[in-house]
Length: 107
Length: 118
Image (tube, rainbow over all chains, first blue to last red; front, side):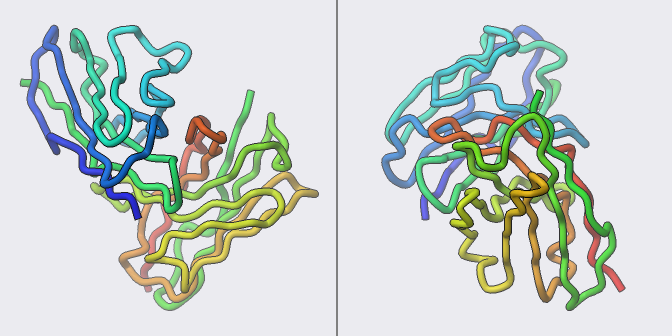
């Protein structure tokens, strides 16, 4: 199984901050990685597909990068509506595996 | 517009069977996509359960495979999950999702909270 190690598990940030979340895969997954945002009580919403593709309707302050085993989600200027939990997902092979999640909280 | 909707009992007794159905609209269950189940215990992260293709080909989480069956009903455009011998550890929000080849999960159901309790 491919393990996805996501960091940090939680962070505090202020509106306007640049935020970076990292996922590391235990083996090469090429670009088969997606990023999701989940708000409390809500459904996961895909932000990024194929490592770098921005989902339609998602603000351009969100961006993804990486390939192989190292991936990054960046929020260039954190907005109040961005406080949520973020997950990465590898869909290179089965079983599909999620990162542990990163909770972004208000500082 | 693609919509997925989970349904099934919200309360299951320990040692019983958890059965859920995901009805799909706006896409055919026989399309090139696969159809997944994901769960999230209260206050915890997302866990992939398993997936089915319309041919009936399945992939299951290794931790659940001995208790899990996922099936598809093409006539009703839906797929289902059956998890046997449940315990309190199976209490979770259960989501169904569409898995696009090469792109991952793009559409999700609203989720259904299933509690395992006597």
